[in-house]
Image 1 (tube, rainbow, N blue to C red):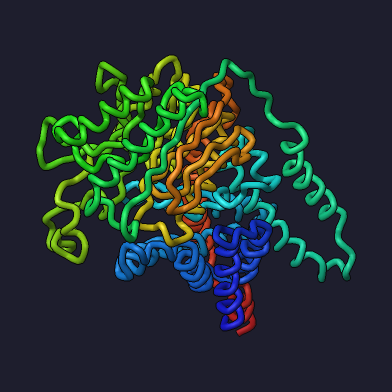
Image 2: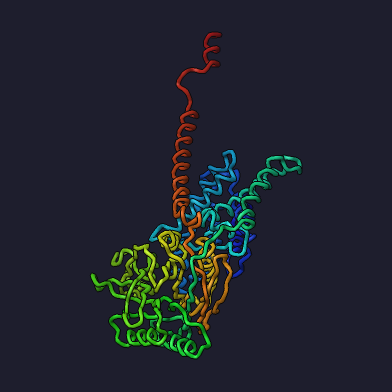
Length: 520
């Protein structure tokens, strides 16, 4: 057991190295193989321990950026995320007793990944295997099989590697024929999408500007300097308008400001509203503004929205953030004794943010746009749902100021790149102080602004209405993995009860006892 635990601890760290800022994606299969080998041969009652240790080192390493919120928040959140590796260890122990166990163990990995990505409080999707696959053959499969499918493919590569390591000694150093077949099949599934990219039809073009205005001072506290933040975005947009008039830059069809480019209600604050109107009139095209608005039905609630401002008209279409951050943008069970709202930095969340529900794309001029606000980009249903309803382009408005000195910026920007591959859409990212960028449907970064930069990107992008198989499938592959977890768990318990009944001593006298009695 000590060697198993050591292997699991190292495996978790190796898996974290597959993600940014290290980004060695090829390390993920060996890491998954290490977990499987550390559990192999253990009963469920013991298999959870190495799996938990694997989860602890992986989770705390890959999400070390949470320390920017507070060490207590980092410890608490990662402890909760690590706990999901306990049922994973049990499920791996069950699966390793079955034929074709590389398939069942990889399904358990993805099922647990799906579970923790949506529970509790909308879950924490960061750390999904698919989110480290940019610039790899696995990433090329995204338009075909989606995020869940790619995670399954990476996990299957790892579990197959573990199977080969187990099989080789039994074959006296000669791989069995089935090993060649399994590896060949896996290679074909992995490499085929890179050789046969999904065909996309162009429905038009648009020129889009993304503004990164930066945050004054340390760049970590937007609310403290929110008026200066808004002024930066107004000034940069007016400078763009002047450059357009001088013929130095092309006129965009619309402009994208980031989340929290206005940290107050832009319809109630006269100064902020005047700045937005001035910028919109100067550039004379719509601006997608990131605003924090009060809920008209309840002044104790707040909405985080992307708001389309039309020149000369004012507010138009809106998108409301679907996944507010628990304990960052709202406090679950506010007022309860177990987590008082006066604890630590929770006093900085005086109002709870309301979750958006609409999947209708924004209408910005003549373009239908799928919008995502910050952590929304890490959830599958939002962007894909809007693209399925006709969105021709994707925008991501984000405010990562609190994490501006961490790898969170790189991890989230990589997810934005992967969304471009998944949906077959250009993605325009506007971040308040990094990383902003324009990404092609093949995941290529056409232009970007680094953290703490202050710049306006203006790029022509292609529009498309083609629906990839991943978009058509939606969230059903993820739901299937959850159904698998439930069915396999029920089957395992039924099999256990049957086995227990079979092991109970019979009340009938044994044949040996009968024979002894006859002899006597």
